[in-house]
Length: 233
Ligand SMILES: Nc1ncnc2c1ncn2[C@@H]1O[C@H](COP(=O)(O)OP(=O)(O)OP(=O)(O)O)[C@@H](O)[C@H]1O
Image (cartoon, rainbow, N blue to C red):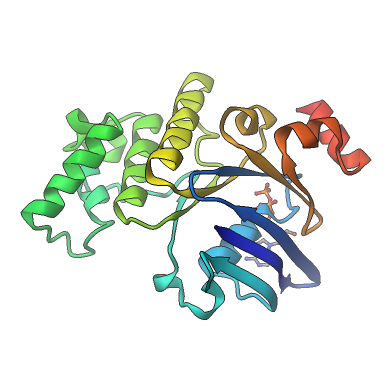
């Protein structure tokens, strides 16, 4: 389990403090107003922002003691996930080798992952030759091939049309179960959380205001702001 307890940092004058957990196979949605601190939490977990206090553990191991490169974490963002001068196949292969030197078994892994994400037929194309949804699938494939058990998603599908977005969300849910990934997903859409997440952390002014199941959040929002946010979603 990914356990986050009183994990704190400071950015300029603002203080951040997070507590929540994500089980293997589970998707937890991070909701909250713009600027509330959702992305900051992802940066703390991946190590790009140093923590000042608190704990961050994966299956009992202290992740704060590990440098960025050794954390069992992989991330997918809304954009800029792929190198546009490389083919999708090469972009995925980067998840295994920065020099793009793959042995036969590793090449097979690329084919298998591409197969399971439905992009085998377009592997030789460059990102600008395929759709946004196909690009995000390739980026997701690169995340998966790294075999890191914690997957951080920062609004990865918000630029896609509604049908594609739902398709990709379903895919994330399925992959979380299949690979037993602990997934934390930033979204502005309550509908996305309903579609894919088991639990939700609502972030307000840099703090986890409520960490609960979707049903609990809906039925007993911790304060007026959360109730209002849900009513507007
Ligand atoms: N690199 C940075 N240096 C200093 N402050 C930052 C940096 N990135 C973000 N902040 C500040 O930290 C606060 C939280 O930002 P963060 O990006 O975590 O919010 P968010 O909830 O993800 O917002 P959004 O939904 O708009 O993406 C904001 O006040 C922001 O201005």
